[in-house]
Image (cartoon, rainbow, N blue to C red; front, side, top):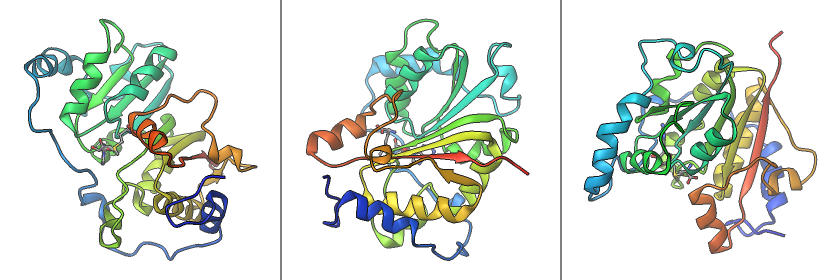
Amino acid sequence: MGKNQLGGSLEEGVLSAVHKTPDADKSPDSRFLRSFGRRHGKTLRAQRKGLLKEKLPAVTLDLERTVQEQFAPTTRTFWLEIGFGGGEHLVAQARAHRDVGLIGCEPYIDGVAKLLAQADEGELDNVRIHADDARQIFPAIPKAALERIFVLFPDPWPKVRHHKRRIIQDRVLDDFARMLADGGELRFASDHMGYVRWTLAHVMRHGDFEWIAQRPTDWRAPPADWVRTRYEQKALKRGDACVYLRFRRKPRT
Ligand SMILES: C[S@@+](CC[C@H](N)C(=O)[O-])C[C@H]1O[C@@H](n2cnc3c(N)ncnc32)[C@H](O)[C@@H]1O
């Protein structure tokens, strides 16, 4: 059985969060606090700089236009990945689901370049990128437009005074609830048990989501169509347990 950083079993840690219902967040709007670390590394190789210049404009999400008109006219399903890192998950999902329009957000420009380097000509036809804070694009996404939102191994901001920088906050969950279609899915994964508990507690008290989990394997193992991310691989290599949470957006009444 996997142990979490606090020494308890994974099950105890995950389940204890469900029974805790923290007070609603009354702090100043944390959506305006920075939730990410570096914008770029020390040096970006010339080749990566070239890729950004050549390939990024064609796949950049245009916030002045509707999301739908930026994908093929036949695209009916849209997914959003927040903080795609090097883009391994986003590119694999885009390859596996050519009929889905994938929107990826990542302010770390070296990660954006890495994503562009992985994709061959034409492979990004169903991908649009916002090379910045995902929260900036929420107002441009229509109500119930998304079938899936991925938040995979987000920055954990472990210090208590930094918790307000975590991407999962009450107001962001309001945005997720608005953007997700009825029955749409929010996927969250982390190896940081404090953040797992935080997310469970916040999502469960929100009211618009239900946790799709019946047994421990549902959060201890990734879903069948999962693509391992770089941070996940690093965690597993260290021997750390990862938790996979799936929430369904409840039908609007
Ligand atoms: C720990 S990394 C994980 C990257 C990737 N998901 C993985 O699992 O390998 C978290 C990423 O989230 C990005 N991030 C943090 N806040 C964000 C935000 N508000 N919008 C978009 N990306 C964000 C960071 O820049 C960072 O690359």
